[in-house]
Image 1: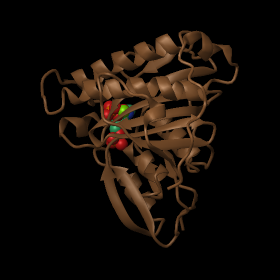
Image 2: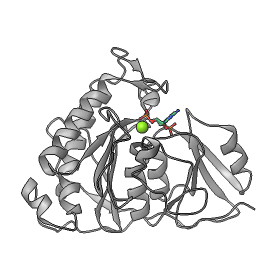
Image 3: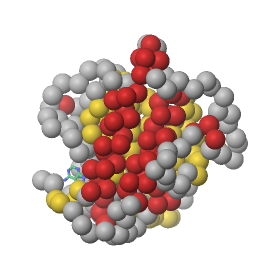
Image 4: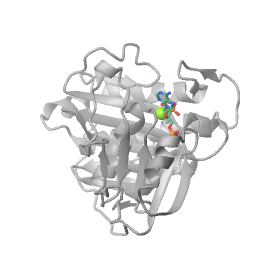
Length: 291
Ligand SMILES: Nc1ncnc2c1ncn2[C@@H]1O[C@H](COP(=O)(O)O)[C@@H](OP(=O)(O)O)[C@H]1O
Ligand SMILES: [Mg+2]
């Protein structure tokens, strides 16, 4: 894989983040990589523990790991960009309240079911929405030491990064640029939710020549398409905006696509729907229609 230089200057103060009318994506990537390493360490400190697991209204679990990681990420965002609203899975009290043109979406631990089962497919997610679409995303799978983050418009990288309570320096990480692959329509690799697979998704997959298929939890599915390891992830079952914003940003910067069932780019800020997503389909470089 091609190496990509990380040469832009470091800006870490709130003042600098907000001086620019075009959001400083590079600064966001640095600050959030550091916060993700810390959040990952907090999550891993609870790995394998069954203490403090509660269940939300949609029956999805929330653990101490979710809450600790959320506190680290939201504090980092408030410090970095105090005037940009932060909507987090754990703290979004009123999901119907109007949001401005720009806001962060945080899912501190996506794939909580997989985390509880002590699998490795769970992630830390931070996305930035501008005018309805994700323009920045960070996805971090601490149990895989795998970081993916957008560092400039249309550029996403992956790096090996161990969780660390001391944080991390993005500039010091060895990294490669992410490129989604072009699909062979006769041999599609599809990814599906491990915990929320449904009949509609099974039906949809019959429209394509799927020769390989695997189940995974969390935004790892977006990541595997962005890494060029799979072609298709149909999601015809409920998710929330914070589940998908970061993964979509990374995948789009890698040359992939996330579309709604009409083929339009998947959009955000759906406060009328309480930030619930409608169905979507994630693709690598090639978007196919069912045969
Ligand atoms: N009934 C429901 N309504 C809204 N979102 C749901 C849902 N059931 C599952 N989800 C979302 O789907 C995510 C898991 O997706 P996957 O199955 O691909 O791993 C969950 O993320 P969390 O694990 O962060 O709660 C949760 O937000
Ligand atoms: Mg989630």
